[in-house]
Image (cartoon, rainbow, N blue to C red; front, top):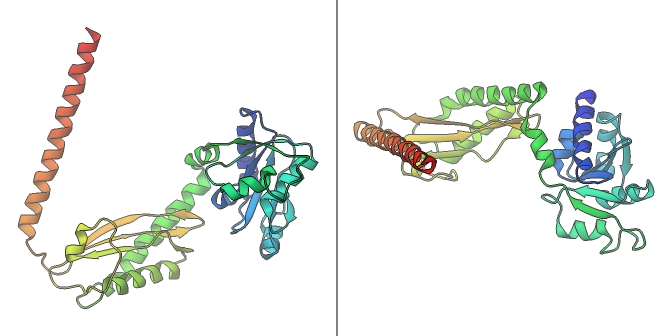
Length: 282
């Protein structure tokens, strides 16, 4: 794992070169975990273009950081972002690329010297990093693929395990809780998101919040769920019928008409675009 995180940090630090920066300041918790393995609600990472990385977190996570991130120098302070910027300035790193999609206005003012926390005589030059780290994460390595696969397996197993709770008289909320409990029992860190359990007329609501409606014979129940494992999320949607679905034939015919209409519209759109292209060619 340390070698994997080191390779990721090298690629992330390289993103600063094109910006003319001396270092990158990572403040997104998700990206800190991606680059170090540390799970923390208060952590930041300083990545110089040249030289070792420095990880900042507070005393609550000091023991975990020392154990999980032995190859990285640690700075233990409450205000981690300001502490790492001060460290960068002390090391002669003045131009710092920051995660402008993650940093708050308040934090920006603090680390830039606009408020107490950074000396006014030595202020950093902050340049936006944009989505460079997120773009690195788009291409999954083998370890990530394995974690995603495990999250998917847990989700499928939990769905199967909770099927015996899917019967008339059970409420949407009760079933959602049973499903999420099964995920955790099977090894998930937590649900990847709030589970959707939409029964009967609630199935027409895309992001229905499970409520007190009880399942009834003839209901179609739509379940959208996923487990989180190792920081990676699964997402699975299933629709289950309780007994013989009400208005089954009419519903199927409506869906089939919608499918055929959509396919026909797609074909006509493709043909029209082809005609327009030919016309532009003269």
